[in-house]
Image 1 (tube, helix red, strand yellow):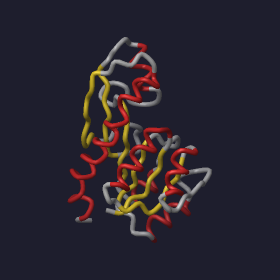
Image 2 (cartoon, one colour; image 1 turned 90 degrees about the vertical axis):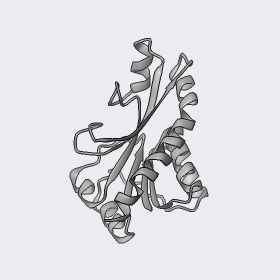
Image 3 (tube, helix red, strand yellow; image 1 turned 60 degrees about the vertical axis):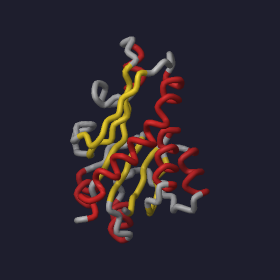
Length: 174
């Protein structure tokens, strides 16, 4: 499966490294931050740094390179309809079951909860409202966002692979 990747933070770096290690063909990367950019460059994956992920040049590259899936993990921009109509798009999100949107781990901690998750879901124009493909759960012990994310990184890796395996036939039939 040929993937175009958009991501950031350590979670984004984890997912990128995981999918490459699993043999997925990453056609290009839009890094949100330096860790994802450095991993992409080290893996010799083309890096794009547009001001807007929805620029026509990105759409054209995705078409030209016959990308089959747009994968996002901790992206900062909303993916618009034009891009969503070109290629199926999947997003990785912590705590989607209860805390869609930004700062989900912080909101979980503020509520005094310890049930965390990592989900893969289809992207739609409505933020974090697409159909869930896979969501895996974990009771966490961390008391800070950093501690919780440190417990979730492996779950990002396994959830991304589980979701890609689950959607593989659907994507490749198109």
